[in-house]
Image 1 (tube, rainbow, N blue to C red):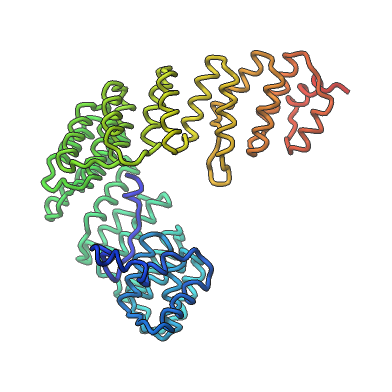
Image 2: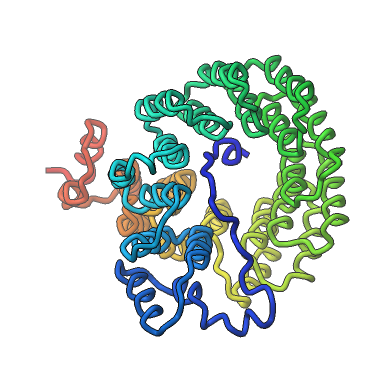
Length: 496
């Protein structure tokens, strides 16, 4: 929910076209320009070379086709290639309009940084510095949390009479919320009203969020009334946003009321609306509401996808409905065309929490046969389970499995701090120096070896009555800062 209400807005010049929607189109897929561009893997010259070759082969390059390619590449987050298409178009003397230039500013900010986006904007002729290009630069400033530059540029936009819709206001409002200045939001909305700039649904959702930030729940409800008076339709997202606000504030009764209003919405067709209902009812511990929303989803969309099953399984797991969880999982398992390990992991975690190790192992083996790997979180649960049972060999087995998948540079940490503490306490308790050393070596390989682990290793040596003359040197080699407490432990493990 948070990600939905904090998003920024950028205009799109051309609607995304439908691609290969018929059998005939599919047949010609490999011959299409888009297919050739989308298949590129990424050197700087690839796009230009591909387009030059296309032209040399005598094939036409129409503006509509180029912009359609840009839209498709942006859709799949291939921003570098999309930016290179615009670069090629400009070098080839293809005219860009201001909507194209606005998108190029956004693409440059994404691929080369805000400075390059500014340089491009500044290089434009004055006739090209209009509401779309100014608005795109403002969007970039807001996205990068560059408050001073955004405020200055927004002021200029207003002086030039380039702010005639809610778009730029919404971006500024989003920025104020992101930088922790929600008190600035109501005055911006008031300014819109004074200038007869209609606030849209997104504006009102952001306004509600600003009042929540200062815990003014009465003002939140006044926003709803204002929307009603002004004929702004309160859609499912508005009520979902409101329910989320109340859940975060611990106002369960109000949250359930908002969710019931959401359920009664006349245009409730979007699967995301039903998933929101399930998630928020789970957060209010309302199992009846979860099941009701699930049945409504199945009626509206008989073919349930993995994403919806995952939301439902997580909700049932959170609420402790074991029977419902197993029933839903079996329903998914019997009808799924592809195995999604995320869903299996929910069931695995439930088994492990309830210490149903036989069922957990059977499911784990079933996942392995179908290909997907166990997630780090699940491996962590297996470790905890076996540590509690004092089955160290099995715990170390899952430690090695998880450590091989860990990637600290991309925030894939393993194991959790809680599990590390469990290992350390176990080693100290059973005075197992050899296993403690193996654990330290694994942590070293994953850049997790720190003073906490070394202090525990020292205590394990002391508990076992053993010495290690090189311990002090090892700690220095590993870059461990030796505190006064650590020094006392070292004196017992490697006496001079």
